Amino acid sequence: MFVQPEESTVSNAIRFLESLGSNPRSSADYAGAIAALPVSPRERQALLARDHVGLGLLLGGRDQMKCLVFSQEEIVQ
Image 1: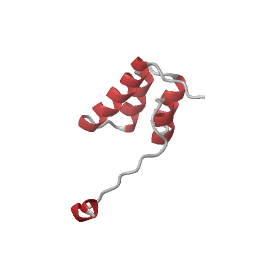
Image 2: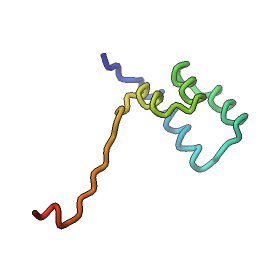
Image 3: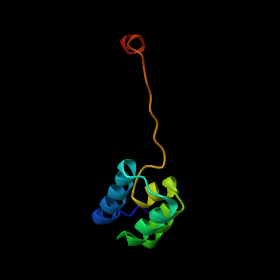
Image 4: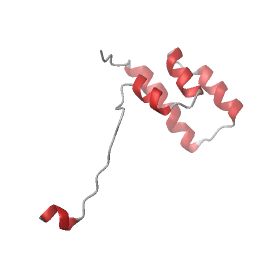
């Protein structure tokens, strides 16, 4: 059964991950920042373990994503 996560939890986790892109942290700072996040214990554990697949599933994301690229010639045929 799929349970939609709370919007605030998703937003908090996503905002944190976005901030890492512009403000990298040391391992100690990373763990401290995660400890202060208002997220569920399971999300916190996934973040600490750097488990992107587990975190994505906890946040209601897809378990797989595929990208297909076609050339213009393939589309016209």
